[in-house]
Every structure is written in structure tokens, then in C-alpha cells.
Amino acid sequence: MAEEKKNKQDKPADKAAPEKTEKAAPEKMDAAKPAENAEKPKKKRDPAMIKKLKYGGVATAITCVVVAVVILLNVLVSRLVERYPLKVDLTDNGMFEISEQTETYLKDLDKDVNFTVLMSENSFETNGITFKMISEMLNRYTQYSDKIHLTYADPTANPDVVSRYQKSYAGTLAESDIIVSDANDDTKMRVVKLSSLVSYDQQRNTYNFVGEQNLTAALLYVTDANPISVAVLATGNGSPIYNTSNNYSVGMFSSLLASNGYDVEVIDIYTDTLDPEKFDLAVLPAPVNDLTPSAIEMITTFLYNDGQYNKNMVYFADFTQGDTPNVDEMLSTWGIEVTKNMALEGNSSAAQQITLTVGTAAVPAVTIADETYSEGMINTTLPIVAPLCRPINLLWESTTSGITTSVLQTSDTVYLSEMGKSTEEADKTPAGKQTVMAVTSRKQMIDNVQHGSSIMVIGSMMVADYAVLQNASYNNATFLVNAVNVMTGKTNSVVISGKTIEEPTVAITTNQAIGLMVFVFMIPMVIIIVGIVVIARRKNR
Image 1 (tube, rainbow, N blue to C red):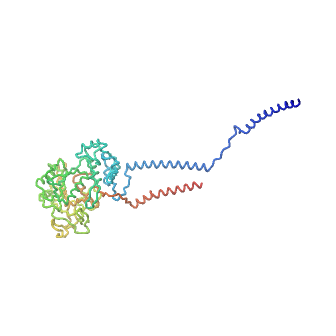
Image 2: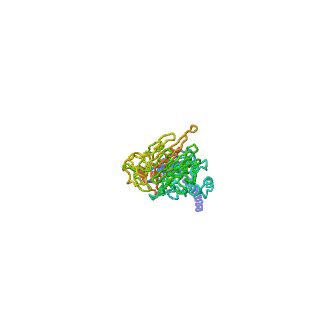
Image 3: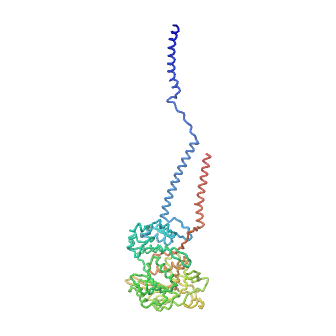
């Protein structure tokens, strides 16, 4: 009993223990938890990390800005180079440049002109050095004048372009042709063939690029409101009327006129007609044999022009000619006599040692006797040479019939050698100044307006020798064109020298070399040094 009572007393005690334990556990758990409103401890930031993030962000921002500026500059410079002539040609002979004369003409251009190349632009630019030179030149044209509109058109993919211009062109248009036309009148156009942009110099065994001459000539023709038409009386019954040794000179003088905006056509003096309605200027290149009376009558009728005058002629005499009494008689009625001698320089220090198509020779340098015919020339200081010229006598200076003017004269140290005889037989006594180029004019008043015709007489075909006219060291080409311009009243012309085609080589001046060193080496080195200094300073902070 006692033991049973004891057990009964023990049970409540056993129950009480767990109850206390259950109540105590939650209190301990709550105590272990942090108070809900208690502030969380702040983590300390690493100053080095903050500094690193700060400079890294700035560096990234600067990099982004620099990249953006470089891209914008690249785009801007590309556009500027396309629009303005900012490229620098460092080749020896300026193969990709255009002349100052063409630049000036382009800047003053006030008429819209289309240049249409019958080939895709990519094919044209990558088809060799000649194509590249033409492409660069055409780009220059557009950069110097917003009146020039350049278009490339593949004739296969764009047959309509070919059809458009074929209507006004007598020949056949082909791939690589360059069509220069009035933007407002397709009928006024010139087609420049690729083959005409390169000429071969037999003496130097080189090819000359004459692209600028022909392209600018086409431009001059298209923009000239009243182009002057020229008839070159080069043949008689199908054969050349001049000595074959003058073949290059005749061709060169014709090309010189054509490249300066004259509309040149070769005609036969016996089978064709020198029509005053069609032609404004005739060229008679040193006929070896005398002309027939009917040919002389045709020339006289042309110059008289039914009393209206306003027609002109260039006559070349030459030491290769035989007797020409009919030609001489015609000239005498205009107050001109061409002698049977040649003017040779007796003073070796005054002679010009030049290269002609027939070889090297010491020839007289001449002076401009009438500055009227040099007006408009940019440079009159370069020498003009007169190889083997026949002196010209002025039969009268001024009469009621007209006026004769000496244009070019030799020095007073020249001596005369009779044609057909060896120069060794000549009397080398100085003969005094000799006229080797003259102009004779006849004028009259019609309805209170002066009208006139003129003949320009030149003592030798070699004044227009191929090698001389191509040589930029002499003023022959420029003076001849300028003199003909003055005689005919033509105002727009550009005389341009050819360029030898060769593999491009870079030839730079000292100043250009210094400039390249600054941009290629010095500026990058300065940037690198500044970068190193900035990095070093950042590491030491």
C-alpha cells in the first residue's frame, strides 16, 4: 500500500516536468533570435575596390567616347575626301592630279555637264593604272565644281543609257566610252574613247597619258555657246599635201586645237569644200607642191566670205617646201612674203639645245614682238623655240587694204642659210632680227560694226613639233593656242601637258616627309607616353 501510494505521488511529478520543459523551450528559442527591429550590422566597403570601380568606369566612358569620335571622324573625313580635293598625290609627275588651268575653269563653270562612263564603277577603277588615273581625274572634276555630274553605267545592265546618247552620236558607243554632254541638251555631246587618252612617244618609247587634255577639251566644247570649227587642209586627192617628215607636227597641231575646244575636221583641199557656213578657221600645213588656182580661189572665197569676212587661216611655211608661186602670190596680196632662207642661231650661248622628233639640235629662241597675242597667258617667261624657220617679210605694215603685224622675232645674232643648200655654205654674218611669225588682217565696217579676216603665217612646221609641244619647258603650245584664240576671238581654252604613264612611285619633299613623321610616328609616340604616365600614376594612388 505504502509502495502504491508512493507511485501515485510520483506520477504528478513526472507530468509536471515535461510541462515546464515545453514552456521553457520557446522562451529560449525566442531569446536566440535577433530582435525584429534591431539594426543589421553594416559591411565595410573596400576603398581600393571603390577606387578601382571609379577609375574603371571613367576609363570605359572615355574609351567609348574616343571610339565614337574616331568613327565620326572617319565618316566625316571620308565624306570630305569624296566631296573636296583633299587627297595628296605624291607620285613623281602628279599622275592623279589635274592642272591649275583645268581647276580654274571648273571653279568658274556655270553650266551643268554630265560625265557618263559606260562601265560599272568598280570594274572601271580596278582595270589598270590608266583606268585608275581617269577615275581619279573624274573625281577631281566633281570636287572642283558642283556643276559636274558623274555617272557610271554598265551598258549591258543599262541599255537605256546607251540608247539615250546613241541618238545624237554618229559612231558606235562601246564599253569604257566616256560621254560628256550638256545636262540640258543631249545633242551637244562629245564621246571620249579610251584609246584617245593614251599616246605613244616613239622617240622616248613611252606612253603618255593625255586624258586630261581630251576630257577637258570635251568639257570646253560642250560648254562653249559658239564653238569654232576648223578645217585642216591636210590632203590633196587623198594624199598628204605636206612632207611626211611633218606628219607628227600636223597631227600635233590639230590635236592641240581639238584639246582646246575647237571642233577640228580634216578635209581634202581638192575633193572637199571649204564651206564658210560650216567652218570658221582653215589650217594650211606647208604644202610641198604648189596649190592649183582653183584651190587658191577656194581659200580666198572662204576668207572673203561674201564680204562678211570673219574667217581666218593659219598657214605653215617650211624648209621642206618646193616652189609655190600660187601660194606666194595669194600671201603677197595680204602683205606677206615668206623668204627662201632659214634663220639659224649664230650665238651658241643664245641657242636652245632641244630634242625634236628628228633628233637633237641647237635652235633659235624667239621673243614675242606683239604682246596682243600673249594676253591671257599665265606664264610668259618660258622660252619659245623656232627650229629651221623661214623668215617672213612684211610688205606693208598698215594700208587701206589691211594691217600686217610681226608676232615672233629671233635675236639679232641669227644668220641666214639658203633653202636647199648645206648650212656649211651659209654666210654666218649676223642678219639682225627676223620675223618668223606674223599676222595679216583685212577689216571693214559693215553697219557700223567692224568685220575682218586674218591669216597667221608661221615660218616652220617644227614650231609645232610633237616633242616641242609636249615639252612643258617650252611655251610653244601655250603661245600657239593663245595666238589662235586672239585671232579668232575665242575666250575659253586650256593648254595641258601630257604625263608619262609609269608605275607610281612616291616622291616627297622634305616638308612632306616631316609632316608624315609627325603624323605617323611623333603623335602616336606622344599618345603612348601619356598613356604610360597615366597608368603609372593610377597604380601609385
